Length: 127
Image (tube, rainbow, N blue to C red; front, side, top):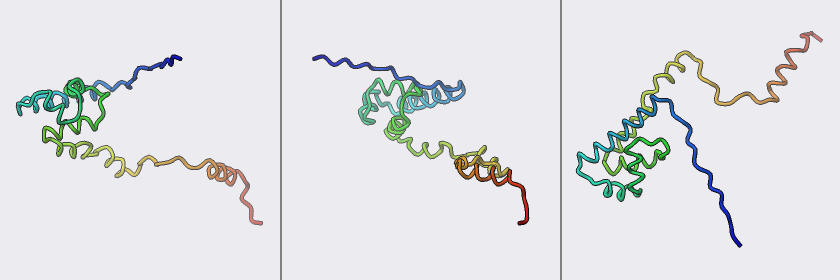
């Protein structure tokens, strides 16, 4: 009996060009950090628990590579403290908060919306 497996290719949503460039820059910085330390790609990959191919993807800023893999490479290069800088300064969020127009976390429940609409449609009478 034969079993046929259909394997669908992974699709990664495309990034806007600015974000793609930022990832490319991160990859280039990690490669430069590795070279400054005179670490081979094999050494960094082994210490990070990844393949050399994955390290190459990291150093190219591949968006399909998980953030945890980038973090492990940064840890090997002793750059893990730089992770604390990601999303540290939420300027847009602070402006929205100051303006008092933060988006609601959840939409109102359907029942409560319907009840509000019914109550608004009924004539206001003193009975």
